[in-house]
Image (cartoon, rainbow, N blue to C red; front, side, top):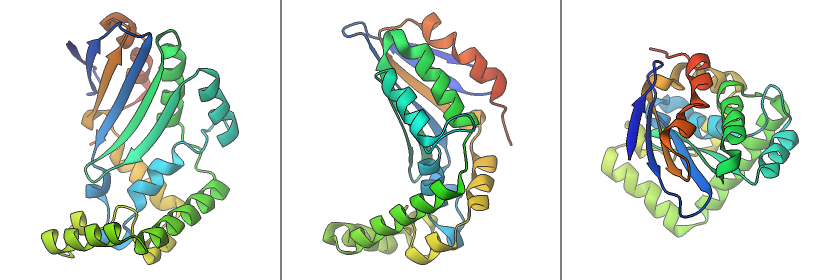
Length: 212
C-alpha cells in the first residue's frame, strides 16, 4: 500500500495486487452536485455524461473504439459530493488507457449535437423516475431531510425544467471552475508497482493545472 502526492495537488493511493493481470482505478474530484446552482440543477451530471462523448481529437465512436481495442472500460459519473472517472484495463495496457483518460479529462469535445442527445436522454431518465415509486420516495425523503433550499435535497439529474434551461456554456463553466487536481485523488489497485503506476501520471501532472 503506497501514497504519492504530485506537484499539481493530486494524491495517488495505490495497492499492488498481482493475482490477476488487471488494473482498476478511479479519479475522484471533490465537488459534484454540491457546486451547482439551485436554479440549474443537473449541470454536474450532464457535464460528466458529456466527458465520454468524444474528445477534441476523437469523435464519440473513435473514443469508444479506442477504449474497446485496449479491452478497457472508462466511465465518468457525477455524485452529490464528487465527479468520478472510473476505469479498468489489462495491466499491459495501463499506459495507453491512462492516455485516453488524460484526453477525456483535459480535452472534452463539447459537441452541440451530442449535448442535445445527452439532454434528451436525461429528460427521459427523469420521466422514468417519476413513474418509479422508489425514486419518488427517495427524492421526497431528501426534500424532507435537507429542505428545498439545500442542494442536497435535489435530484442529481435535475428537473425537466432545469435540464431544459442548461446550455453547453453552463457545462463549460462548471468544468472550468470545478475540475481541478488540487481537489482530486486517484485510487489504483492492480498488478503494477508504484513506479509503473506513477510514471505515466507525470504527463498528467504537467498538463493538469490546479485552480483556486
